Length: 212
Image 1: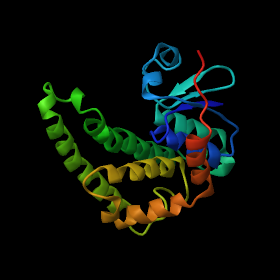
Image 2: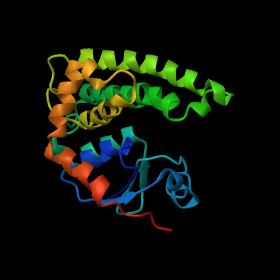
Image 3: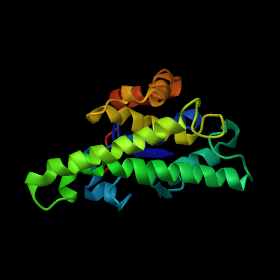
């Protein structure tokens, strides 16, 4: 498998999941310019990361789909729902959808405020409004993680890889992650996870430039 990613972006979750799943992979690092370039858009017309290219050339995009595919390909690692457990699968879908659609998307006005206002002078207003929404999202997640080591099923899943990335972004807001004790404990624990540490090291030390 070949994973297209940007260092520190949400694609880090898929990178971590590949390591946790003990799945062989190749990395292709992208810059912001690469992601919107013609070469990458021929792979993923959405112009976003991650994109996972399978051995036969099939491309999977969107974090939710990529993470669930990785989990399904390595059932022995138990990174997803147990095979045949439709309720557990629904709960995993629900959890990932919340992280991807509600939590991650709440960051958009922080990263690209120009998409949400018509005048440059109002961009900081968009950011400040986003910070308020993010505060609510992280307070909710902190409540969910009270007395838990993992988001679901009492064990590590691909959802935890995504939550880790969301936690790693929080200090970019006026409300540091330390305000949320359960999320802080979760992130500290995963900071010391060998798979997470390997992914972070690979993304900073061993980037591969895109083809074409």
